[in-house]
Length: 426
Ligand code: ATP
Ligand code: MG
Image 1 (cartoon, rainbow, N blue to C red):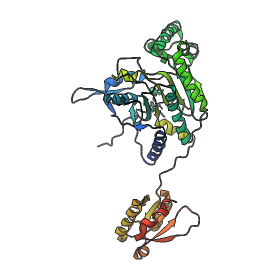
Image 2: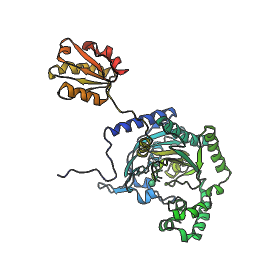
Image 3: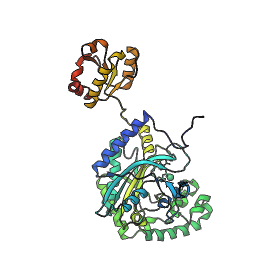
Image 4: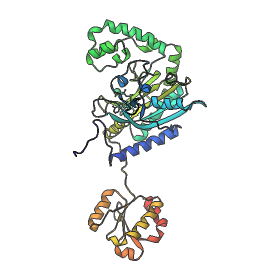
């Protein structure tokens, strides 16, 4: 049989690259935990109706990018999740989770969109996302944004240089409706500059027309009626509330009146963390408030705010800025010149591992020279040499590999649990 290949746009993540993923996930969990976010894991496959709700505006994700299929066994219409929010909200409603109050939740995992694969854009990609459900105040919008900022800082990214926050307020449905009508009238007056896609979308999703990358339409988009001018007092107060917190926290941002989201359920605050270093795949993290979604999905009305962060793009950005990502290296590497001593060696290694030492056993035999080479390449701080002479005396020789001029010394095999800490703390 011809060897098969992975589906186009869906990538294997293999060592040593996978270590970067594990490191990033650990950094994220550490930040999330400090803000009180708890992990949720929802299915990758959901009822198609969860994403295609026949409500709201036609979006790219649902219109063009959904992996939808029929379950051959029973004819059910299913979809691979293109994003995480809908599934999390479905789960919260299904399990009446918001009954005793708000919840701060996060997820990490694969999402699926049928797009043209390119750098920073894949058909299976990964998101870390957070959802704060049941909180309506601007403080939580700000918290969600500041959580991302702390993450950037801990990853070694510099605000302003590597990532910039763009902010907008979409108001409430009635404000959007009034703006939408004004906008459609404006677009109808400027049909001559609209491209085919814009003409097609002008009535189904006019806001998205303004998000165009077509240079010939920039001036038209720039001068279009602004949603911010249609906002009422309450929406403006919410927006100003968010801004006051960000200002107090010293976070600089750009107000982008044309910022809209690709999904239809957002209201009030929307934001994107963008970078100029990844070309047109420049949005690393995008989110906002979605106060109508819980009710749309059949739950008792409850507000929500959150974001989705593209993990591939974040890793690309970290590479681009030369951030140092620690490699996964063992503490020690075990060199065994002769197979005879293996039982004794392996029992010792078990004691070391039980005491928390990461120690890799050289597989099979090989010359001392080649085993030392492997030890060096592994990045281990120590080589443990289980030579026949050492074993005969119930000992192991320990050779520090990373300290210039450090001398080799011996330790008793039977006491491994006692000296294990010497290897760990190096
Ligand atoms: P874009 O404008 O780049 O298509 P989007 O608006 O479709 O992004 P969201 O639905 O807001 O993206 O998803 C949140 C984040 O997930 C994005 O900011 C991005 O970092 C990441 N993302 C979205 N689609 C992809 C993809 N196909 N491949 C890799 N990452 C993606
Ligand atoms: Mg997209």
